[in-house]
Amino acid sequence: MSFSEDDVERYARHLVLAEVGGPGQQALRRARVLIVGAGGVGAPAALYLAAAGVGTLGLIDDDTVALSNLQRQVLFATEDVGRPKVEAAAARLAGLNPGVEVRAWRERLTPENAAGLIGDHDLVIDGTDDFATRHIVNAACVAAGRPLVSGALGRWDGQVGIFAGRPCYQCLTPEVPPEAETCARVGVVGALAGVIGSMAALEAIKLIVGAGQPLEGRLLIYDGLAGTSRTARVAADPDCPVCGGGARARSVEGGVVQLGSDFAPGSTGA
Image 1 (cartoon, helix red, strand yellow):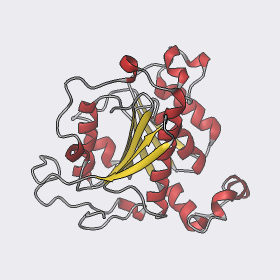
Image 2 (cartoon, one colour):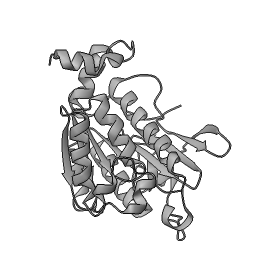
Image 3 (cartoon, one colour):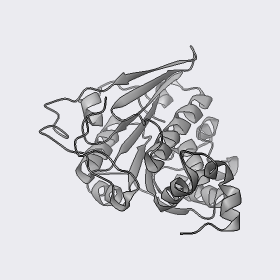
Image 4 (cartoon, one colour):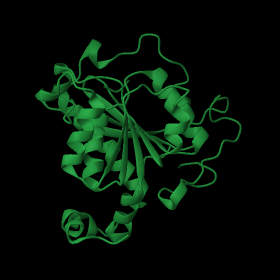
């Protein structure tokens, strides 16, 4: 695939990056990324991935835009209130970058539809706000051999991690907490969603172009009040019902994301 003059201008700052360049931008164009949840994490992630030139962006969310979303979900505008999120998001992303194909599903991700949706994409970003859905996403990603970029928000803190085979997200959260906090219950500062969503997009881009050291098997924890961050390694649970028993990370189809045959890397969203 060649670049048009407009492409060269649009992606000029990528093309001069040694870690991206022409081959990396072509990899972005070939990539198919599914974003589960067009909320606080998914909204800024979608904007930056569309701007970066990811060829196909899938969005799945069954919700409509509420006025209270606009404090942090920067993908939407006041006139979108009451509109299906995926419909409003698709229109905004097409306006940002008409070269990106946006696929939209106005539904919840369930055990019945997860395998097909996730298997049709190269990489998944999960920004959902409940652990049950996160576990469904994780199990489908492990089964399909797709890397999972997970982002979550608290009041003033957030976290981003990548799970690809083993350890998986369920190793980190084996059970659904009975009293899990949500942004609706405890609140969240709006700009934090931009930080975590942008980090999730950045990690996805690193995986796609093969740059740097993605957060594979690690969790980056950001404290917005203190202005600090730290990373913690996620331990694989030998008894994990999802990835235990010698589960292997597989290469993504199309050569966009390449993971090793044995993956052994050195609160909720809104």
